[in-house]
Length: 68
Image: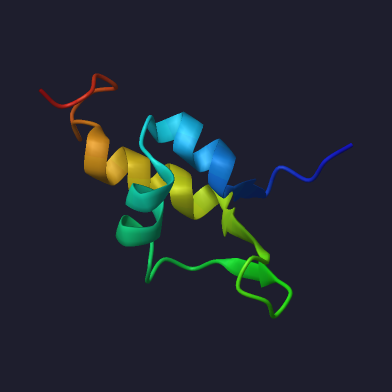
């Protein structure tokens, strides 16, 4: 079973419906785990913090409906 406490760039891209370059730009200072030292090493983002970010940035605080 895969640990779902972290989400990959591809999963984040698909979840938000944005490009890889948007992920690079918007999540530059976001907490992440880099697996390896090379430029192309895999990067994972903590799922609980991603969910919090999505709720804060994309959802209305009074309801579960997206902001318009």
